[in-house]
Length: 422
Image 1 (cartoon, rainbow, N blue to C red):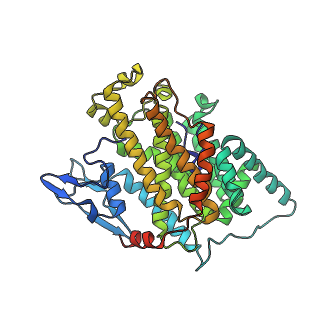
Image 2 (image 1 turned 180 degrees about the horizontal axis):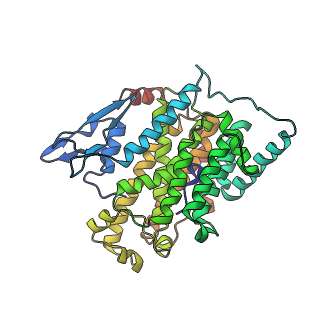
Image 3 (image 1 turned 135 degrees about the vertical axis):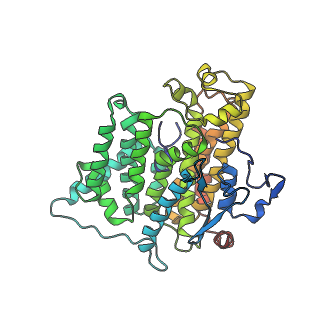
């Protein structure tokens, strides 16, 4: 399953008990007024991940300035289990804390000066140039957006993009059938080496240089490799909690890798955690969109990246997907899946404006273009079995100036203050 690389590679699920965080959610005979919850809490309600703790009570925790719902829930044995949302949130907190250490008052992220060994300057420059060529070839729209960034940020984003693409192709590329868990273990060991300043090849050298200059943590990179391991051994997901973790591994991680490089606007009043959460949401949204677009393609490989419990609730099964027939049950199921993906895109929008001004355009382009794939699935009458939804070139061209206009909008102090207080 292709990862949503670098928040975007130019574009070639839940039926829960309370969809839409602008609506109230019923709990027994009692109404939970969504206006009394923070945006984060309303999002979790919408995901169906607002968990009951000790009979009818709900537990809300506040971590730093970022309120989240407790994901510690009791299993049938009476033991506490941690949901995927909590696992991912712990990584977000760690990365945000790392970034905060590198922030200076009234400045953007500090970028360390080049430390160049004699005779290596030209080789390193060549390595970054090669990364740029790969990005330009496989992610044209995103590449154009990176040209607005500072040279240091632009080169770093290229290096991260190339590593993500190489990782994705281990299980999704031409040699995927020969990849084993041992091969992924070796790739992870190689990752650890480049973080220690011992790159294996030219492209590794570019990323190794990048992680010395920006507050990039190794965990999201390791988590992406874990997503590749899942693809080797898992082809079904019993519920959205499992699917959410998979989407984080293969795509949400990219947002956590990228934010330290893209930078947060100096004038932004948003918390670092909230910006990372928005980046994570965009990665999840992109991957859910990939999944919905590629249902037929994945089915032909024996894979179903849809929550099994939700398929059952809709009166569907794997056999219906393999049959590839668009029925009313399938349309209704897809409408709910698309609704959830759009909700993640809406959550992501809150953070794009908080990024450094020079970094916003490629991310806005990513968001607008990928979200249009959902429109195309609807235009195809939800036939994602035999028809591949894609955004036409004219629509891409129209989206670019719209994305650029949005990138010029500075952080809104009013909305940010509201977000911080929630």
